[in-house]
Image 1: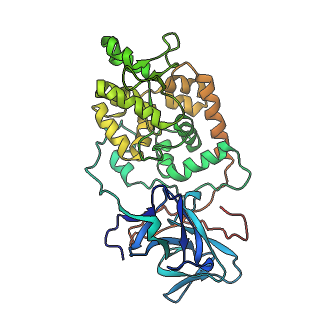
Image 2 (image 1 turned 180 degrees about the vertical axis):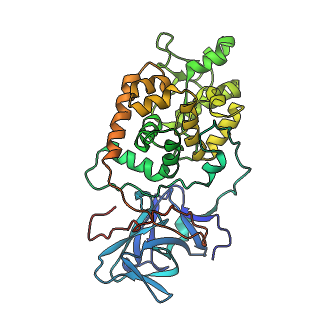
Image 3 (image 1 turned 120 degrees about the vertical axis):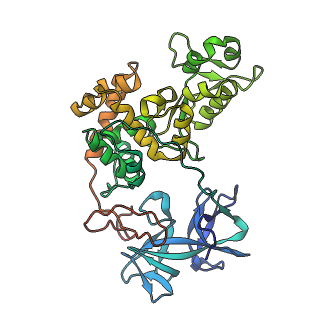
Length: 416
């Protein structure tokens, strides 16, 4: 067994990925999938030529043979092999087909935990850095969930939404957000008297439903004109050497450069790297003002609003939002209730009034239409049931629905 629970195996940088095998030797019959570059498996055992990682298959279409192996159930054509006991495209790393078997580690509720092998030549064994000190927690307004309550809640919902074929982008986005954050969105929405569908829609419109980028950094948007107001106005020479924006339409024309002799670059390219590059340049001039000049995380709340959502300093807000999406979700609701007109507008379905108060008046109608579209999309999604996982193996517990668990689907039918 891996001695460190934080250890994992991942393809080497530049490899593009590595074949996933049922046994530690190269043969067409042992290939069960492909681990792409950037993906990982929890490490079961490291070796000189092969590393064993942990994978999961659903007991709906797979069975344990004694205490040794995992195979398909009679009549099944194939079953997904997953990197975690979660039904998601991101966890699908292959398929177990007839005639193949995996080495059983242990039964885990409705899943079978098994070994899969990757070549040591094309993979690295890594160890996650142990968690540091707890991030700062906010002071929440009366009636909203407390930080301790938020910390205790599961992020995943008791009743996920399924994503059958043929859905549009708004439906897919709404399902992804709900299935990732619904366990927290639902009670927070109830605490301020709004429908969960509306909470999902606000998250979708503000950030596309992602709190962190692929590189692990928090999603941000750096606003040149805000940095000008907070710092540049009193330091115009230094600001103008590195930043510019349209003085007539201040949220447009945002550019930066890393030094006065470098070429100008767009801040808002649709790529988080340019936002962070601009922010880092600003932070060299004034770190506090730079943090107050970015919108952060899932709710895209500006740093200068830190006190409005319960943080004494922008640094505390930045550290909390960077550490855990839970604080981002809680921050969104704290921001909403800080202005009584905002929850009232959401309850009444007046998304224009909400967008005007949350995002500003410039594009209120545009944001309102987006919120309405995602809200309506969410309401069309069918409900499924979640899997309940034990805590004995240190796996994340998912809220129980009290009904039939959600099931994996075989390749013989429609694939999730």
